[in-house]
Length: 173
Image (tube, rainbow, N blue to C red):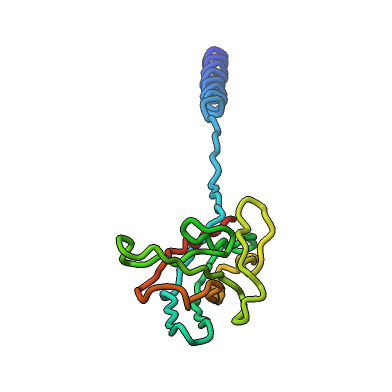
């Protein structure tokens, strides 16, 4: 009987040792890793230019003023400035050219402003320059602006024709 007790004890110790090694080995084969979920929200702006500004004038009339609306929508908290850049013009001033450039070389000067009187000329504001009329901070909602066009040139000395210019609206943010 002594032999059986010793054999039984040795067998239990061996089985217990294997169980202990197996449990320990199983714990050693687990490895952990992790990953992040992240997102970068970038600044963005969109601009929607309004309708064309039509000015009609007779040579004996007071220089007309017209206006149009434009909208800017920028991401929340994004500062921006709007520039009005007439073709070949500078900072809010431009030149209307005739449709018939072969027989008509006349031009008419105009300015873009934030008010109907033309007192606050719409300045560029691109590249950190100071701007008049078109600055703001994004709210994620559309923000509306009005731009006025007023003739500053003499219309009594030009031929009858259709005169026009293209204005590029730029938003720096």
